[in-house]
Image (cartoon, rainbow, N blue to C red; front, top):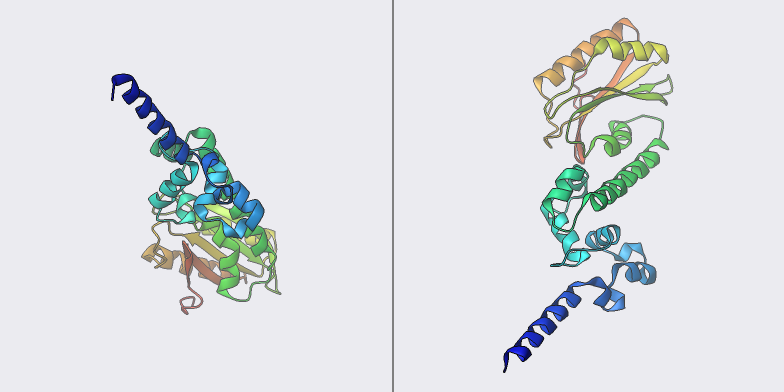
Length: 247
């Protein structure tokens, strides 16, 4: 085999290898977009749906292969993927620039807001789970702590919800005076305190216990009921009321 033939064969194999990695050279029924059209969105894996978002991969791998790599990096957990920043995505994966990273984050945010809208349809709070379903889309995948309060009327229906503070990875400041000011302003009969633990553990800390008691004492003065204090960590939560820790 002469040198010219070797070069031709090398370039032919490389071209064929790249074609195999490109989605457009797959069988039509295996391409994510065509698969969605023919079989419906439920038939697609998370990696295939992500591949539709990013559209193209890199020279080394298809969009689906790149999507699998991205999902594998977060343990195939979409909530964990939602915690990634544009910089983290674009700097960690070849083939993911800022535009693709923004598309991924935007899609996950739309999904989060959809879940929130569905949760808000259930506006009467009778159990800890009712409150959890409202705040799970807001707090479950945040990389830092936030504190929210749900304000209820006498029928335990939601009259308002407010973000009271934003903290760091380990804690957020809870201003009891500001919470009571908001409760009085909307004539709330009961409130639910909610915050998240980015660590993934919903076990209450000593400061969590202390702020619960301080808020309970303040509520007593204003004749407002502290209905519950929830700690959300991913898909799990801890309820002070369920554990009979609101005395």
